[in-house]
Amino acid sequence: MATCGPQQTIINEGKKLCCYYDTKNIPTIGVGFNLQRTDAATVMAKYHLTLANVLKDCSQSTSNSCLKSEDADGIFNTISYPEAAACVDRYVPNLPTIKRAGIIDVAFAGCATLNKFVNMKNALERKDWKKAAEELRNSAWCQQVKTTRCNSDYNCIIDESCSGQSCGHFTTTCSSNSECFCFRTSNGAGFCALSDSCSKFTDCTSCLSSTSVCIIDSCCQRPICYPLSLGESCTSSPSGRNFQSYAQLNLKLSHETMSGM
Image (tube, rainbow, N blue to C red):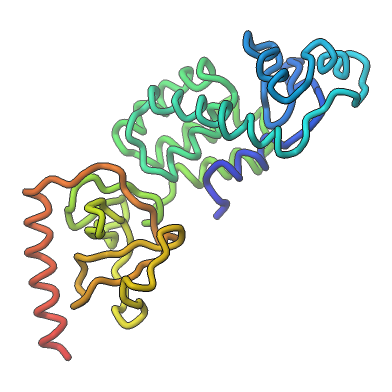
């Protein structure tokens, strides 16, 4: 399955360092940055470019006033992607990370375009991921973009894996995949992932915060260092009641594991 996230959107949008016209004949630069925005001159000035000269590249098919690659990345990371993400969070709040990434990619067509997906919105709110993905695939937007992009976002929305699902409460399941569990971490957050063999993991002294997370509440008899690549951290704090029920389940599973050794 394609990667769901900012890098996939960069691939889908393409990164062009000089002014070009998009499919709607709008002057654009970088990763889908609309040069007709009211703040376009200010943004270009930040990167030592004059908007009039940038637009001249479009009208004259020249390449005289262009961004550096890192400048295009900067606009994408600080303006374009956060704005699209905010649009999605207003559209349907609290989507699982992977599904949210797929919808953010669609939002690069604009909030107004995203808001036209009424049936997809209803399906997302019901957590009917298959219906939501089908609504996208059958849309006019999917007919306009490349099949690769449409299929990529379809797969992100319909995804049934653990990685990226959020678990705000410590309940036994935290995604549409019933084999996923929300584990308690050393910082009190939740981490959604598949349970695995304890022998695979080292203790938390070797954990690097950039690549792993320390899980202190699992069926293992010790805290374990779990790679971030096997799931994604959750942002909501747990509820004591749900955590208590999960802790009791863990205790039961731990006893069963020990008795079966």
